[in-house]
Length: 145
Image 1: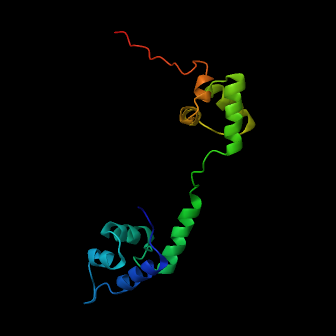
Image 2 (image 1 turned 90 degrees about the vertical axis):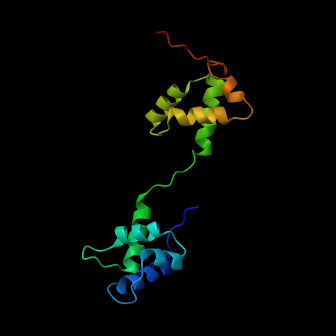
Image 3 (image 1 turned 180 degrees about the vertical axis):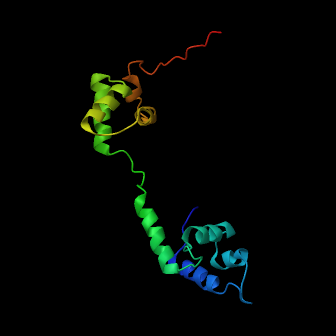
């Protein structure tokens, strides 16, 4: 399981970084074993968060990490109301996913056809698949040479 460094672990890296060039200097493998992380995690941490002059500050590293984390948008599940609307369009109007995507795009909502297909096939009752235009019997066409 993936987990990020804590501020205490970053402080430990800061102290070790300060000891560079002294007798107390240890390898990144030893430092990683002390904090319970993989050596590549330590290398990546130094690579991402060192300053232009080559220094490492744990507080700045933590702030930079939080800043990077705030930029990314977490993958949220499709809202239930939107799934309900999609279900209604499929069961009542028998709309194909492409038509649903186009209608939602006009309203300013973005969703992919693949998300709708995944929702149809994940329906355990089979109601959605039965109400598609193919009625659940999609045949593959053979390529002719």
